[in-house]
Amino acid sequence: MTDFDVVVIGAGLAGLTAARAVRAAGRDVVVLEARDRVAGRNLGGLLADGTPVEMGGQWIGRTQTEVLKLVDELGLETFPTYDDGAAVTLHNGVLTRYADESFGLSVEGATEVGRLQQELEALAGTVSLSSPWTSPAAAELDRQSIGEWLRSHTDDAEALAFWGAIVPALFSAEPSEMSLLHFLFYIKSGGMLDNLAATTGGAQELRVVGGAHRISERLAEELGDAVRLDSPVRKISHGDDGVRVDFEGGQVTARRVVVAIPPALAGRLVYEPALPAARDGLTQQMPMGSVIKVQVAYPTPFWRDAGLSGFGFSLDDGLGVTMDNSPPDGACGVLVGFFEGAHARTAARLSPQERRASAVATLVKLFGPEAGNPVEYAEQNWMEEEYTRGCYGGRLGAGVWTQYGAALAEPVGRIHWAGAETSDVWNGYMDGAVRSGHRAAAEALDRLEA
Ligand SMILES: Cc1cc2nc3c(=O)[nH]c(=O)nc-3n(C[C@H](O)[C@H](O)[C@H](O)COP(=O)(O)OP(=O)(O)OC[C@H]3O[C@@H](n4cnc5c(N)ncnc54)[C@H](O)[C@@H]3O)c2cc1C
Image (cartoon, rainbow, N blue to C red; front, side):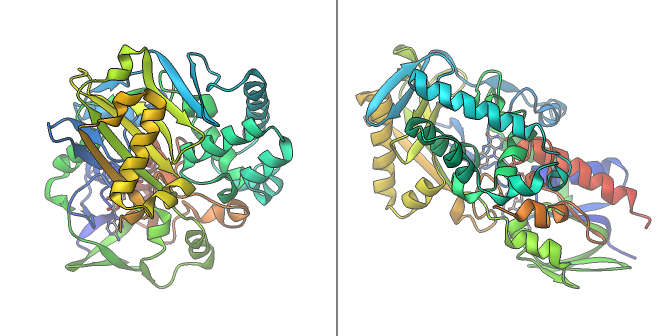
């Protein structure tokens, strides 16, 4: 006799969605969460005046239908990300203002970027989302990094600088750090590059009123005392009779376990018996990205008066991408910015004062002197987080998809794997996390009697 039908590890979107589905099927579920809060990578924050600012995941696109459905079911609302006016790009000290799709590049640079994008998307079209390792040219695509592919397909310095900045903006990792196959899988999973990069009409179109963490909080409210905070899991024992999960503070038994934590962290749990080599090999090679997210507040969204949207793209600075993150009524101005990939690791070595100065200096270059006088600055270094250890998510380097990819979501006996990294649609996003929760719960429920 076990305590529960299913035990879920991790109260992020994936784990909470899985638990909700198990509960909806009339089964007993418990969720063990290491932190003293739910929402995982969707950490909510507040400015001193009470304005919500998202310190982790925040935007939702209209094709992210599963998370949108959940938002609706939970009685939450979305509002459009501010996206009126021109964007700015800084490259080699030159600031370009633009209101088209050019990213402020020269005609030659934009043409070359477009040519490479077309080639990459044609290759992405050949990739299987459900099993990338079976794609027709999988071995060839997985042998090289996206960085190597780019260098062997162009010598245009501006195009290379663009890709050198846009890849970390999407992955929080450098082009040298992930395989071409992974890059192609990921862009196809999110509906290709324009969809990933765009605000209106793309992945950054909407925000959740109050912050994206409210989705998880509402799910946790529904689940009530089935969610146990401050319960870091250390060990999973599994066998024919069921599973036993040891966490700091106790242990529970269940018939199935859904592990809804990033693969890199799942690999740090103790399993008895040990996991198959293929699964362990995968988690040894799926590092998290590197990102420091900053929110910089001003009395007003002053850039709007200059006809600017707040979207800034610097190819010269550590803070690579900025966007308008003001509250819906524009009562104050907030610019959100990101140090990503190698820039995040460099910025992490600065003192907090130096990092703030670096971020604000970039905002001054992008939006003028008024950006030099913020009323508040908040930052979140995701690499420091014990129960995340980097963001936005896990990535696969050269050779990993083809050698180990099959172990990413394949259950091991009574252990099922969820999390944004395991989704074939919107992989790495909140929508992917929700989809993975549904999938893992369905697997566990299907096999409950087994
Ligand atoms: C800065 C940043 C910006 C992002 N921007 C966006 C965005 O705009 N749009 C978007 O869709 N996505 C975005 N993402 C990604 C998005 O947040 C994630 O894809 C999604 O939230 C992952 O959900 P998850 O449930 O799979 O994992 P997580 O949110 O990581 O949840 C895992 C949970 O497991 C817990 N845990 C870990 N180890 C243990 C343990 N040993 N025992 C018990 N519990 C444990 C963690 O505390 C956590 O609560 C962003 C992420 C970051 C960090």
